[in-house]
Image 1: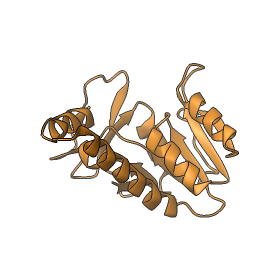
Image 2: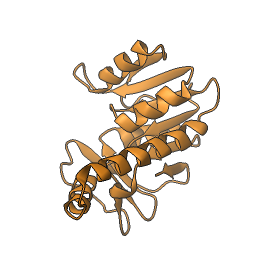
Image 3: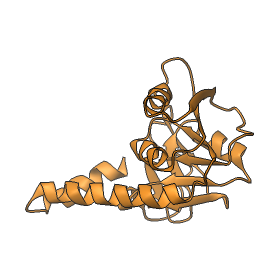
Length: 174
């Protein structure tokens, strides 16, 4: 994933690597705080996967319900459901590909984001974003995930990741 390579390149030039970790943590805290403000009181949020950035935002925003889209019994999304429940945030697993009629917005992480508004995330994200329209989707990232240029037609490891094409309902927070 682009973020790992970018962080490694930047880290190689930093005289004190813990400083880079502090910058990474500060950026993630800023992104989470900004995204949490976008989630209104009493909101129902749809998400997919077990993104640490998404979990951080949900802990700050404390929506009334989080719908975690999962695929199969071993899906990592169940970990997010459990973690949120342990923090008294209502969460429920729903099948990937299900419409989220009760959700006010979606909040997802990304592994890469492109200049034209497309991004890469785990399989099932494109269906979630499409099902949410015209409701908004917040895509969380950081500067290390930015990839210059247009959204590509495909992505390596297509069995696990997919390209989500640009949509006017998507807003990046990074």
